[in-house]
Image (cartoon, rainbow, N blue to C red; front, side, top):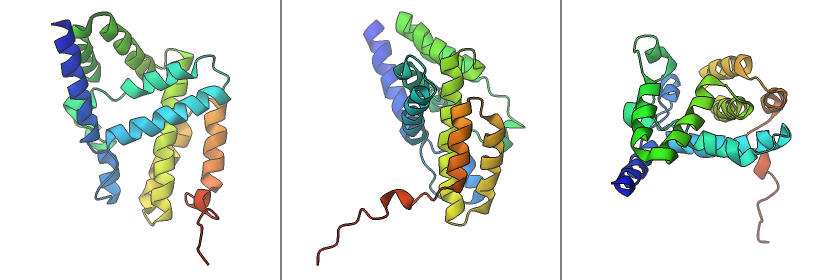
Length: 189
């Protein structure tokens, strides 16, 4: 039965690729990124941020982030406006998701809890990485005319805790999301 529970959990995690980040619809984005897309780049940012913060185990931060949105596979992504009116028991969901997975489940739940509570250095870095991914997305949307994405930028700027995340955010504000590929095109003559 133990392996069957693990199999079911892995199938459940696939739902994250089907669930869209709903908050972006508030500003008119018709097809926003999936929660899984967000989790991937957040984990990548988490590794980089942990290294820049000189955290001894950047892979721990990545692992934490990979599971931080797992409850959304059951409850969906509920944006902040809806959160004013809906009481979501995300911790209950995360506990139920992991309780049948024995020691692995306990470890996954503890990772999830670190981000929610910001109870460890890894949890704080992971939350900042999560916010930074949202800031990168907001910046790209602002550049193509979605002016209300600025609201995300303003809120994220107030939420960041690590000095490195704050520095990256300040640089992001001055950056252009298309600059990275300028000069890389190879033209045949």
